[in-house]
Image (tube, rainbow, N blue to C red):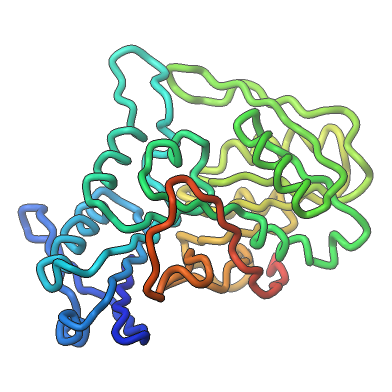
Length: 316
């Protein structure tokens, strides 16, 4: 999914490019006619890209080229909330590629004026990207925590070692006192979870599991099963990037509510996750006073926090 914004004389003009795939598998994109007409006068371009597939990655490169052909002098900013291959941030087995490094080099080669990402899984991706701005989950999680279910207290739960530092930082920023940490054991060759361990001292209050990504959801299903042996309190789940590639039925059976900033399923109705990001779309990840206004590129590896969106209540 792509959105384009051109800044012309201080005014934003936003539209959606068209894209298609030829029978042979190659992609092509077209900048909307209205933006083409304003391209010569644009002081900068802005691409918001939610990259869900390899086709999307290629279309991003094509779109970047198309904008620069229309106005080579105008800088191009990229908002890329989800970073593909960010989870491939180490080589686990001989003969594998370092996927995060390959993808980040591809992005760096485009020479974007800034690259803004949201919760990029680990510190590896920001270290690899040039002129990067990182937005953490604090504002999104704050919205989830405004649910009346947490009015009398909540325990934040990190599902594994990889989430430990992230959840610690979020708890400190949001003033949450009770934090617990689970441990997950995977088989290195298959990635299958073989064991989940949770602490014994779970406080008598709702538990909110916090992580950056839910893909198939096995981590959170196994964690919910392990928690049920330790507490009878309601369980909730927050993930910034809700891929939910295996659907939501099993997660809904174990969690009283699910929150996400980016719902890849675009679900509606009962059982749909609560989207705690009201700034999705064009400039969704733009820090105030930078994107959409003529400004100098930010220094590499800066951290930003998104403004707090409005509260929603779980449908489930």
